[in-house]
Image (cartoon, rainbow, N blue to C red; front, side):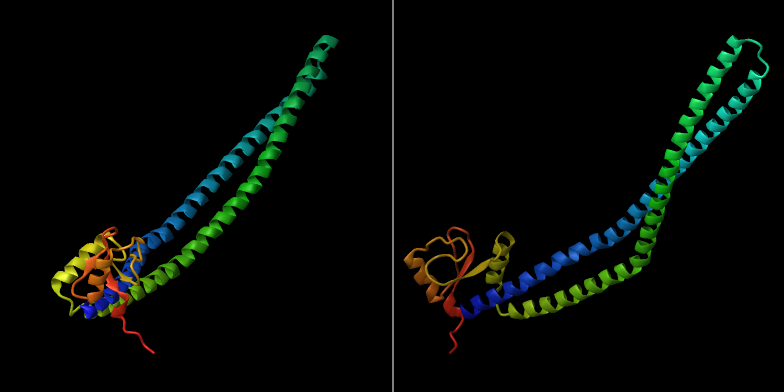
Length: 239
């Protein structure tokens, strides 16, 4: 039983390493998706920034058109002032000219604001386009690096499985089945008892149970956490 307990503990060490590799392997598909997701997000950002630029340019052109309309109106009204014969008519035309001048100034101010926005939008498009280009250029390399790490993890896992299977080859099937059933619920499934308390849950075991465990006649479990217990003496002391 001493050798069986030692084998179980060593088996669980291999199982623990295999579990860690399984977690890594499970994450690789997400890493691949993340590469594609980053590129898709960058493409969307380019499209959004270009849309903003187009909107700003369209509005700036509209405002310039309105400015020209007001300029033409001012020229027309100024021409009419030379033809009026009364102060009242002249005053009315002058009011229209002032209103057109004010409207022209407002359109001009807004147009300048949109021109500044256009400059900012062009910068945003340039930066987003460069980021997209960088991601697309790095994509194949990133995917290759992920594949390399995945292949390495798979190879390492295969070696560990061989080592684990070799370690537990001599364990009785019913004991191995008991270990596997325990490990599905508890990790670690087996702990080394050095004293009278369960090293995991710290419950103090009855003296008789400790004696039974020390005799190495069968495998006992903790009455509290249900983990399998092995006495420290399964590992011979070395000088």
